[in-house]
Every structure is written in structure tokens, then in C-alpha cells.
Image 1 (cartoon, rainbow, N blue to C red):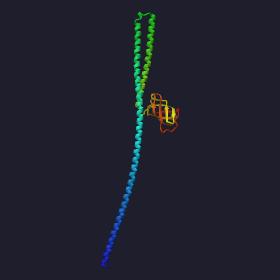
Image 2 (cartoon, rainbow, N blue to C red):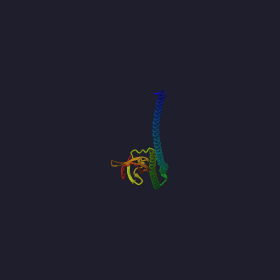
Image 3 (cartoon, rainbow, N blue to C red):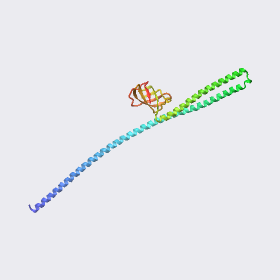
Image 4 (tube, helix red, strand yellow):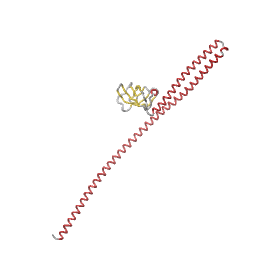
Amino acid sequence: MSKLGKILLWVALVGAIVAIGAGLALIFQYNDTKTTLASTQQAKAAAEKAITQAKADTAAATAAAADSNAKLATATSKIDDLNTQLTAAQKQATDAATAVQTANDAAKAAQDKLDAINKVLGNETPDQYVADKTKAETDLATAQSEQKILQDQLQATQQQVSDLESAINRSKTGAMPGVSGKVTFVDRAWNFVILDVGLSAGVVPNGELIVYRGRTFLGKVRVTKVDPNDAVAEILPDAKGDIQIGDSVLN
């Protein structure tokens, strides 16, 4: 082979090597690009999924906040109602105390009059003395009877004030220890019941009671309105039985 042929052969070999290297470089670059594209697409899909989840979480948090605000407004309204009842009971207690004092004064006046009649017995005829003494004794007995009635009313009013104050404190936590009663009315259209126990038995707004018949658990109710001797409660969604009049409730 001539010298020129050898040179051309070497040039061809070098060109082939260069071409092969360029081809390999293109292949490596294509693979890298393909890998980068796949990673980018995965990252995009993950980002879109995270955005969707974040929107769902935001919607759920907004709904929960609205529900909490509604429950807070309801609880505040119930506490305001109890405070109104407490103010009225306190006024009744004050009026009863005033009436008791008036009765005490009347009793003292009747006793003083009786003492005065006995003291001046010598200045009156027996018939007049007997009549005055009898009237004074009757007035004293009447005043003492009124005093006892008013004293009992005062104690009852003071107990009502104490019960209302206790109910206000317990309504903040829904605590109703030892409460038990019966269902006296059921409204399935509006999903509520009426109970035969109220403030006097320890029932407070927001408190929950278990409903059962015999040994069968029927569900739970939450108190929405309470009076001294009865209460209204909503039937909670997890009720497992058909609640009826006469079913028992227990805390």
C-alpha cells in the first residue's frame, strides 16, 4: 500500500472514531434528557396532587371553622338565656327577702301589741281584754304563718339561684353527673325529643345523655333547651335504634 493510501486509511479511521464518539455522546445526552423529562413530569404530577390536597384541606378547615362558630354562637345564646333566668331568680330572692323582713316586722308589732295589752290589763274590761288579746294572738299567728311561708319561698328562690349558677358553670362543659329520666315526646320530623328532667335534676344545655330501652342501647341526645322540670334534646346522628316515648335516658 502506498504512503498516500495509508494516510487516507488513518484519516478514515480517525473520522470513524470521531463519528462513533459523537454518536455515543448524542445517545448519552438523549438518555439524560429523557430521564430529566420523566423526573420533571413526576415532580409536576406530585405538585398538582399536593395542590389538590391543599385545596381540599383548606375547604375542610373552612367548613370546620364555620361549624365551630355556629356551635359557639348557639352555646353563647344558651348561656345568655340562663343568665337571664338567673337575674330573674335573683330579683325574686331579693323580693322574698324584703317580704320576709316585712313579715318579721309585722310579727314583732303584733307581739308588742300583745305585751302592751297584757301590761294595761287593769285599764280594760275583761271582755275588751279578751277580745284584744284574741285579736292580737290571731294577728301574731297570721304574721308568723306568713313569715314561715315567705321564709320557705326565700329558701326555694335562693336554691333556684344556686341551681342556675351551677347550671351555668356546668353548661360550659356539658357535665351532668347522675342525671336519669324518661322520654316524654318524640318529633321525628325535626329530630328532637322532650325529657321529663330539667335544671332541678342537674340537666344543662350541651349535655349529652344515653338513650336505652331495657338493656338495649338506642343512641345519644344532646340538650338544646332546659327548663326547671323538663328539657328539649336533639337526637344525635349515631342513633342505632328507634327512640320512643317511655325510653330511658342516663348520663
